[in-house]
Image 1 (cartoon, helix red, strand yellow):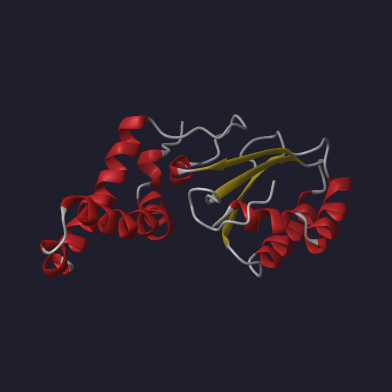
Image 2 (cartoon, helix red, strand yellow):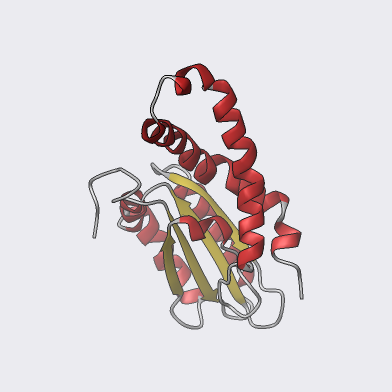
Length: 190
């Protein structure tokens, strides 16, 4: 379903994870097409980035992650002729149809592929610590920089203003950087 309202409550950011099992001997052709596809996706409204994770064993499963600022922007990409043309070229290189998962909300801050083919977030305590490490300095910065204005507002209006600034900043700026910075700790190799 395409949602026309672009607010994050009704049209949330999404992370799309795709697991593709590539035929042996087709890896180079597959990787070339996927890189080209990712370059095309970057041209679409709302595309926030793509990651390609190569197999680390003999199962030939590639994990691809695409992030979009809204579900409606993802659906525009999903229905594009460019995407369809690339998928048509990629399909013969696969052993079986891809597994696709679309997730939205704050859990997308922590998604990462594992060797088992599932996308498992880190333990909750690690997510809490990483979130706190990002949000505490952000809230302090907001409070300090907006202190004169905040003093004039009642508590519900203060909270509204602070969260209107903090949530998008956390989602689009701080948490992607925090996950990169803490990647080894959040996802230790087994």
